[in-house]
Structures are given as structure tokens and as C-alpha cells.
Length: 544
Ligand code: VG1
Ligand code: CO
Image (cartoon, rainbow, N blue to C red; front, side, top):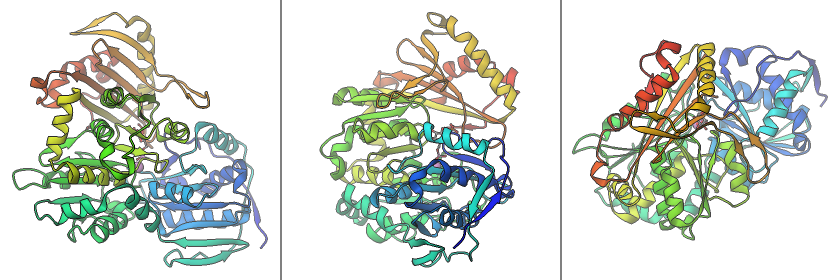
């Protein structure tokens, strides 16, 4: 079939951010907008010509329309076969799993992750490379450069592919295989964790849990794995039907947006275990009865206990955490005698370390945890890891974490987000901090003395690539830190993220409310950055 060559002109601002190109749906719906970006992928990723491509998304509004366009463009650009999830569904970790398992040349994932969905909300697209992970900056930069001078794209005319039935068809000269989105992923999970032990825990009669899929992509995955394979009682998965607008919700698994689940964990009759995942299934939140596990602590606990699970019984080779993530994992790495790496925000920076075998586990403070089993963070994987630990250690979530603090000390940690602030005000704030940086080391701020202050720059130890300006770090003697950076996933104005951390070795002081323990540092951060004066905001929008 002949491909049609359509003339087009570039759109401004098609630069992928922390995790792909994210914009309002209306922006993506403009004629040629999606097509330009997709053609830039085909023009720069030449292995796709004659290769196999994985395509799927989190089921949000515009997912199906976008997939039909991508399929017709893939056929016009010489792709041999596309593997697409049934119903257009593939969680981000499942897409990574499938790219790796079938050794395809890459994948296109349609998601704006934790951002809301619907005609007036967000959409997103990203390209994952053949190793299964998000494209590194060298690739996203090349795609972006191409979007700046694109003048035509290729597409074939064809009827829409039926995405709802598993099976094969052809589109022009290309094969389209509509695959079960869950099966390969579920099999991988079964190979990593002790399903018998978890099954017994569920059948013990004394363990109550809920998994909140937040009407996003993990519903079918969680139902198959938790209810069908592991025998959790029906109804364990709540909000399990993926909806285009996530039921008007904000599919972000944190204490604010997953409050329905949080309520169920409270009080003497509360759940033993609560967990949630985000829009595209790569984030996780872990709760015990009356207990919230910070993602930074979760990474440290998983690392310290990895040997108790079948998939990691041989131990771990190293750990990486994103720069703003607390240093709790560093202490575990030290005690295990393995390396710990500090990377910029975004999962793409873990890819080389995982590929080189330098690390086994990695995580971010933003509810992301993962390992070398795929090249994305993985929400359900983290949940199963925790369930495996609970089944083996026969302790509660709270007991496991407080015992961890007793052994390693506690890193009090919080993140304050100021959302949709004026972009100029936000960049002014960062510029102001950059000017302050050189004077800070050695200075006394309240009870804290500054040990170092910089704008984080990362040199990848595997390929030597450098990522500069990755966030303001102010480190104090004793290990406390203030970190500030602007979000690279928002679609409206700027979002300022302020991360606060304080190490507490004294067990007697481990039971304090987090915001209270961190209050002095929070105040220092606000004053130093002149947050209220510059943004007009006295308080953050979201505290996690
Ligand atoms: C946020 C998080 C970051 C995460 C990214 C993608 O980025 O802070 O840790 O990797 O989202 O997560 P930013 O630039 O807004 O701070 V997801 O679940 O959107 O793929
Ligand atoms: Co996500």
C-alpha cells in the first residue's frame, strides 16, 4: 500500500520533559501535532524501519485515537510488526517487559502518568528504546531537534484496527498483533516473588488488604495477579476498571489523592496493608495500619530485605536513587557493601546503570521503585515485593519499618509542591538561589551549618554523558538537606518542588510527626528561596 506524504510545519515546544512529551489533550488534538512528534521518532530511530514496535497506553482520553494514528504511521514508515495491548492498554512497566521479552526495537507509550485525564486534561507520549527503558537524553534531544524542522510525515489510509480482540491482522504491509496486556507481565512477577507464601498469607484469614487502581491502568493487572493468581478475595482491587478520565480523579497514589484507601487503613479495624498505583502503573504507595511508608524508606527497606525474595535471593549488586530521594538507601548500601548512585530525577537516568549490572534496585521519592527486571519503575512489582516480605517476616508494615529505623536510623522526609505557579516567578526563584549558592557553604542557618550548596550535575559513569542544572542542593553537616527544583512533567505554568530531609540516629526521637520534625528546615527553605514573596503562595498545594 502506498504511503501518503503529508506536508506539515513544526510546532514549538515538542521537547520531552522528565518523562516524555506531556501537553493538554487539546494541544495533541491539533491537526498534525501528534503526527509531527511520531514522525520525528521514526525519522531518528531508524532501527524501527523493518523492526518491531510495541504500542500501548494507560487508557486515558485520546489513547485509542492516538494509537490508530501511530499504527497507520508505523505502517507507512516501514515497521514490520506492531505489538499493541488489547484495548490499547499497556501499563508502563508491562510495555517495558514486552519490549525486552520479545527483543523489539522499542515502544511508544501513551500516558501522562499521574496527571488527570479527559478532554480538558493531559495526554502524553514517550519513546522507549530497545533495552525497554525511557529514551536517554541523547535520543530525546535528537527527536526534539527533528520536530523543529519537520516538513512532512508519512501515513497510510486504512480503516481503524479492532483493538479489542486479541489476534493478528495486517495494515498495509505491516502486521498488527493485538496481545493480552497482562500475561507476560504476570508471568514475570511470578518468576520473582514467592506466590505460594503470598497465597498463604491471603488465606490465613487474618490479613486484610486493598489495592487501589484509581480507575487507571493497573486494574486488569491487579485483578489477574492478586485476585486470580494469588487468591485474594474478590473486591481486593478497588476502582479496578480503567476509565478515560480516571473517574474524574487524579490518578496519583499519595496521601492526598488516594484518600479513600488511606481512610480504610485507619483505626483498630483498619487494613493490614493498603497499596495504590498511578495512571500508567509505574508508581506505588505502600500503607500499613495507621502507617504510611515514604517511598524513600520503601526503597531502603526493599534493599535491606531483598534476599528474602526468590528473585533477589542472591543479593543486590548496587542501588541508585534520584538526587531528591532521601539518603536512607545509602545507609543500606553501605551496610551491604554495595555501591549507591545518585542520579537526576527521571527513570531514564537509571537505564545505563541497570544495563551495566551496576545496580539491582533503584527508586525515586515520587512513589517510584523498581529493579533490573524491567527498565521502568513498577508499581505492582513494589506491592508484590512488600507482600512477599510481609509473608516471610510475619510482621506488620509498621514493625518492619520501625525496626529498619532502629537499625539504620530514620531519615525524616517530606516534599512540598507549589503547583501551577507563574513560570517567570518560578525561574526567577531558581535564578535567585543560583546566585546565593557560592556564599552558602560554611554559613549557619538556624541550627544547621551548610556543608555544600550546588546545582546538581550528573556524569553518567557508564557512558560519560553529563546532565547539568538538575536541581538546587543545600546539604548540611549531619546529613540534612534542602533540595529545590522545577517539575518537568507539568502542563500548566511551573511546579516548584521543595524536598526536605533530616537524619535522626536517636531511636527515642523516631516517633515524631514528620512536618513537626522538619519544621525548622521547612522554614529555612521558604525564607532562603523567598517562596511567598516570589510566588504569592504561603503554603504548598500538596504535601507528601
Ligand atoms: C515527576 C517525579 C519524577 C518522576 C516523573 C515521572 O517528575 O518527580 O521523580 O520520574 O514525575 O513519573 P517532575 O519532573 O514532575 O518532578 V511518572 O509516574 O509521570 O512516569
Ligand atoms: Co507514572
